[in-house]
Image (cartoon, rainbow, N blue to C red; front, side):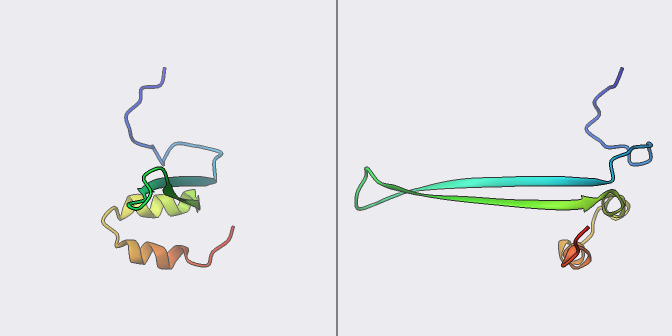
Length: 77
């Protein structure tokens, strides 16, 4: 039986090599001039990371996000 701990064990053998993360948000802005009208904004982002990248983040959990961005910028796998 698997017990949920809220943590991922990166040392366990696993066939997963890449992880896709998708996140999004929405905002509804009412019109101050015409109450029956609203304007909506939807934002979405996708991120593909290798398990090696997760291991590096796990080793340095207080990493500056700008440094992580430099490591990932422009890379395609």
